[in-house]
Image 1 (cartoon, rainbow, N blue to C red):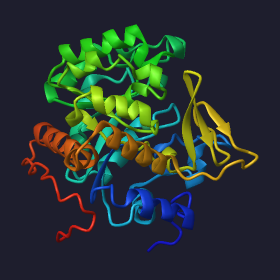
Image 2: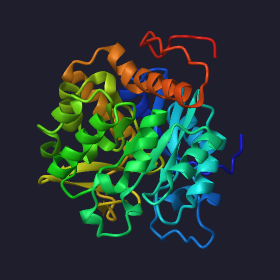
Image 3: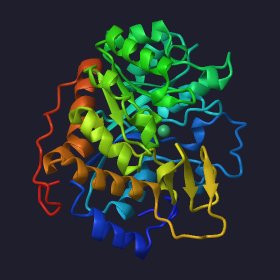
Length: 368
Ligand SMILES: [Zn+2]
């Protein structure tokens, strides 16, 4: 083992107890994380200097597939990690180099990859890049819309028609972090999300972070339009709110809910909390992400966002009455079937066998 590999926060005794007491009997043997940011230092433009409080500094300025696997060996013992990854969506990232990295670590069996796209990237160049690196879709980001203030960005700005026509023709998957202050509750977002799903039925949309609904009032009554679109999926990345998760499990087709982590951010110590129809990231470490409140006084002891997400899913699954088979599908089968089918379709690979729901016992044995 490479002892110099920086895998971020170490799993301590208290963390180990959480895993043993709360998670080990709940988690299936295979976990498919559909939302991970994996990149090496070469993915940044050469002049990049990460801000002092950037969470990527916690991992030495990169988060490679090896770093994620090293983290999972310690924090998710006995589990097999499957991943869909993309780079860090920002102006500091060289999108072409990031696509090369993503392609290098993707095998379209266990590791899948998406290309970061900006609205001005020509569709022909994107198609060539997807083919060269065997990637299965896009990850646009609102920061790449550079002609208007960020609070005025719309989904249609992020995904111009030429890119959508390519996605439709190839049957791509798009992971979309929706813009605008009201997120899932924003009427423009609601209209554009469902219109895109209907206009481009061969494309698949994964609305990240349950449409960024991190507090309960943002999700209530806001899933019905997407639930009616068979090509709309949700990922749970960074959502640890058991109320939001329970509502989602009750009001959205369970076969279209995918587990995502948002690694490496999720590997930090912290928890997302609802406060007065808003949310904040309570940070157990002195790094800044989004709307962060740092516990500089060490008022409480934290575990990671990742474990808090798993706890939230466990509690919500119990409240919403998910069966063990549905939990296994949420963590693995739904994503496995979606991504292997996309890889087969886009890159003309022999289709993989659909996921067979396993005995939910974590001690079930199967040859590796
Ligand atoms: Zn993310």
